[in-house]
Image (cartoon, rainbow, N blue to C red; front, top):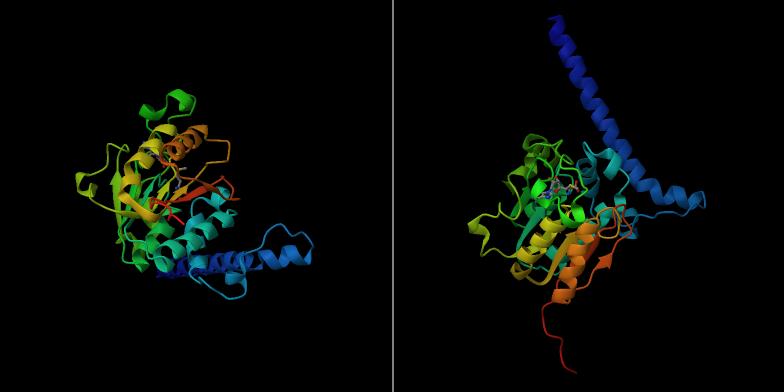
Length: 272
Ligand SMILES: C[S@@+](CC[C@H](N)C(=O)[O-])C[C@H]1O[C@@H](n2cnc3c(N)ncnc32)[C@H](O)[C@@H]1O
C-alpha cells in the first residue's frame, strides 16, 4: 500500500516537473525578444509572425523535442529551429512542392522530430537514415581522417523514437546502416521535397547530395547543417563541390552551427 502511494506521488512529481519545464521553456522562448529589447541588449528577436501574430503555435512543443537529451547543443539554437519551421511551411504548404522528406544524420532525432511533424501534417513520408551507432570508419579518411570513430554513438533507436514521440513515429521509416549502402531499392523512384543532410563528414554528405538531387524537383530544399561553422570542413567541401557542379547556391543562416539551405532551381530561366 505504502509503495503504491509512493509510486503515485513520484509520478505526480515527475509530471509536474515536466509541465513546469515545458512552461518555462515556452516563457523563455517567447520573452527572448522582449527581454533583450528592454535591456537595450538587442541580440535576438523572435519573428513578429510568432511573437505578435502567434503563428506556428506548435513550435513550442517541437522545441521541447528539439532539445530533448541534447540541451547543451540545441537548447539555445532557436534560430535553427525557427529557420527549419519557416522554410518547411514555405516549401510544403505555401509552394506545395511534392515529394517525401528525408534526413541523413539523425543522431537522437532532434531535427527528425520537426521533419516528422511536417510529414504528418502534409501527408508525406519521412525517411530517417543513420547508422544509429555513430560515424563509420569507412568515412574517416582524406579531409576527415582525424575525426574520432566513436562520435555520436551514444544513441539508439528507442531513444530516437522517444524524442520524435509516439504520435509522429508512425510517419517515419527508420533506415539503419551505413549511408549510402543503406538506401533501399524501393526508394529509387521516390521524389523528395525536403532533404536534411547532417552527417558532418565529406563522404556521406557528398553521397547524399549526389543521390537525392536527381530526385528533387524545382523548389525542393536541402537543409545543410555545419556549412559555415568551421568545425566540419569535409561537409563544406562536399557542398561546395556539389554547388559548383550543379550551379546551385547556398543561403547561409546565423544559427549555432552554420547551417546553409539550398532551394533547388532546375527550370531554365525565362528569356526576356
Ligand atoms: C551531428 S549528428 C546528427 C544530428 C541531428 N541531425 C540533430 O540535429 O540532432 C551526425 C549523425 O550522422 C550520422 N552519420 C555520419 N555518417 C554516416 C553514414 N555514412 N551513414 C549513416 N549515418 C551517418 C552519425 O551516426 C550521427 O548520428
